[in-house]
Length: 113
Image (tube, rainbow, N blue to C red):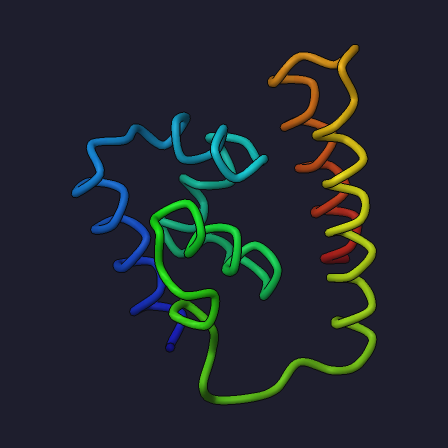
């Protein structure tokens, strides 16, 4: 899926579900600002996040993945790391939903650099 198609698809799916950007962000463990950046094309969600978006909408994991190129092996390792981090953060009872989302958003930005 091309980046432009992806940004439109996210916007369409979110609108059909009746969710705000903040609601989608909460459901996938990121921030409203990040969702807005995807929808405007300012940034593009990575593979692990595309899977989380698909799952939030009840779609197959591969439905929002790129068909054009495979990710480099180091990107796969980063995705595995991020998934483990997400599991740990989401299971931490002392953090609020907002704190969890902020932590995961920060980690995602660091991995994208």
